Image (cartoon, rainbow, N blue to C red):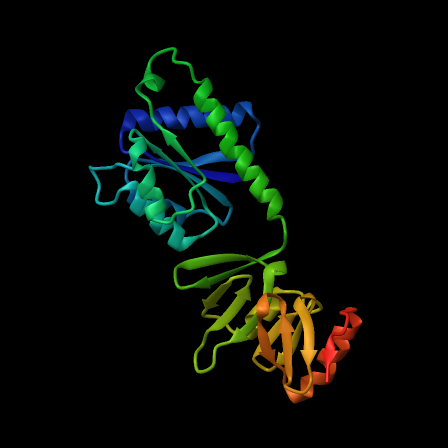
Amino acid sequence: MIQIYICEDEKIQLEFWKRIIEDYIKSAKIMAEIVSARQNPQDILNDIEQCDNSQRLFFIDIQMPEYDMNGLELARKLREKNSDDYLVFITAKDDLAYKVFEYQLDVLDYIVKKPKYYLENADMAPLTERLKRIFYKINQDQKETEQKKIQLGSGSRKYNIAIEDIIYVQAVKGTHLVEINIACKKIQVRQTLKEIAEQIDMEEFLFVNKSCIVQKRMILSVDKKNRRVNLTGGYQVEVAVREMKKVCIEAERLGIRNAVHI
């Protein structure tokens, strides 16, 4: 079930968007519901604290001069809380589109409000087509991410990480942090290695030393002389002496050609 939030400072327009979106999800039989429709951006932030971790879609007006926070600032705060939320901006000024990129908000879509939409008996086909495209994008994205994930937090920031993307996880020396390494990205969170290990299938991972686990299928080769394992993405991780035999056995079991270098 997709939870939908709408933030629009003009009450009449807020009711319009609520009606249009509600009508569409009913007619298209989409598993979604509007859980919050607010004029004040702060109310949206308050409302998400009361809801569960369902997938969320936000329709946000950019210009909200009556409030301390505009739509871009609201979106930035939402991104800080959850990087997986879907954001759609609605605005009367299409020249504000560049601001979306400036804020690096990873927006799903951008709807330009037109005065004709609010006229009686107005043709809603363009808006309906836009909503169709938005929910199609969400559907495609969810199909691509229907892989097992773990949710990790660092302060108010939440990360949903696909387990199959993890290359290795390593405790950061001298801190209470662990570093999760995925392709072209490193994420640090305030959790223990033990807590991470409890959320994943350790049949797919391997301790190479007391502070590091690697995903077995990410192993490219093992350097016994220098006690290192070479991983996907150009990463190298030190292997403890007592773990070397186990690492070599796993590499050979996986059938990695010329995996072990003496």
